[in-house]
Image (cartoon, rainbow, N blue to C red; front, side, top):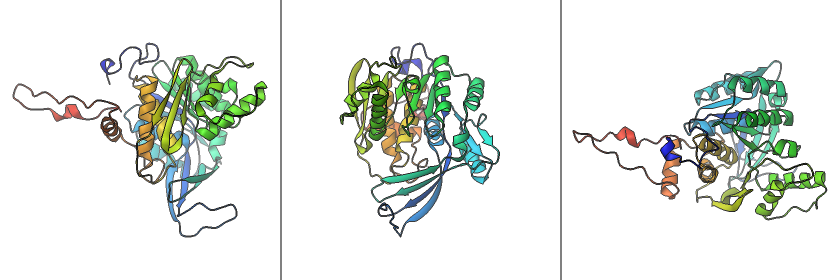
Amino acid sequence: MTDAAAPEGERKGNAPVSGRVLVVGSVNVDLVVQGERLPAPGETVLGGTFSRFHGGKGGNQAVASARLGVPVMLVAALGDDEFGATARAALAREGIGTDVLVTLDHTATGVALILVDSKAENMISVAPGANAGLTELHVRTALGRLAPHTGDVLLVTHEIPTEAAREALRLGRAGGAWTVLNPAPAGGLDRAVLELADVLTPNRGELARLVADDAKRTGRAAAVPEDPVRAAKLLLEATGDGSTGTQALLVTLGSTGAVLVRRNAPPVELKAPKVKAVDATGAGDALNGALAAALAVGLDLEMACRRAVVAASLSVTRAGAREGMPPAAELTAKLIELGIVAPPPPPEPDEAGVVDTAETDAGPA
């Protein structure tokens, strides 16, 4: 994408449009059982089918960004086991930079046990393994090599220790990069961490947890508003802990879409297109990866969020968290279909009257 496609005012400061996505987060192997319905506590449900996928929010979000045509590097920890070796190879096949991945001796790679029902709803239990061993020093060393700078997007997931997440956001902010925090899970995050993120991307439940925990720390009324806009605005307010540096929250609302709540602008409702859902496991990761990719190519925050919602919707149409991540051409086609972006102009023939069809190929979405 050129500067002409992303005019001034649609970039963060004087950010170039050739930024990288630097993901700091988890890598898991997903063991999935898909059945007719989810079991109740203590119940055994027979008749499911088993699949094994590569996962973890960090790995998934890195894949989501990479498939949209931007350079991606991943900071994460793997175990020294078979799962770790295959996970590293899978990331490399997606074109993700693995130079700063950490391998921990005598440690298991993270594993997620996932149940999915016929309506694409899911239940997930995670054994973090090596993800729990990613330290501030690991993050500092890796980002010291990568040197985040203006134009980059530092995307952090919270399936790693909070101290490591905080250090990643701090270094991203110090380098002038966009900082995006996906607060999943939401426990253990306070203003000292949240204020380092330019954008927070919680779902309804995570937003409620963030607001409730913040209320306890600041002494405000503990009731959490049901309206996601009102709840999000509470996290954008100054408190006794000091004014947060967060500028916006993109609150995901499941199949209905999301809402963008900014400090100095009206909220924007972002409706999701209608699709036939198969597996919603990776929808949030698709959204975060697409958001980061769009910011990295210089789009303004609102347009980046619109693209992210559409990417998340496309991701649920296929089984498997990573398997559903849309490539650039698919996302671009859907955005054109929905009228969110204009179709590219037809290529002009050369002097001999020959049309170069390569000019119409979809680039980074």
